[in-house]
Image 1: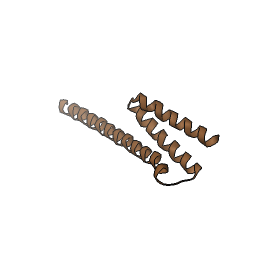
Image 2: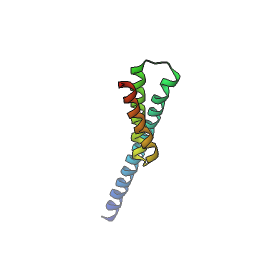
Image 3: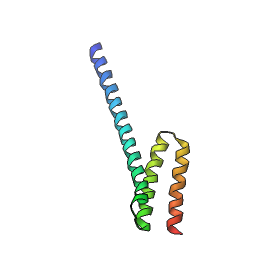
Image 4: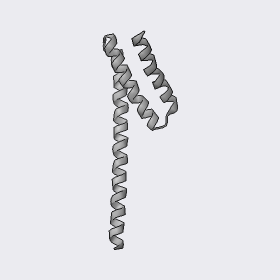
Length: 91
């Protein structure tokens, strides 16, 4: 009986570790994609709408990653980037 309980606890901790790794990799992926999306308009000439979409999506991705990892200075700068993008596009 004790061996079965130990095995169940081992499976639970392995499952938790797998979820944590998956979350970490997903977060890293969102961060890298956000970074690339923000940089594309600086490398490739795009029109105003594409620039707005790429910057907004990229900064939003970076905002989410920074928020989940509690990097509050970057959260503020990325929130400002998104707000500035909306202001620039709609003004």
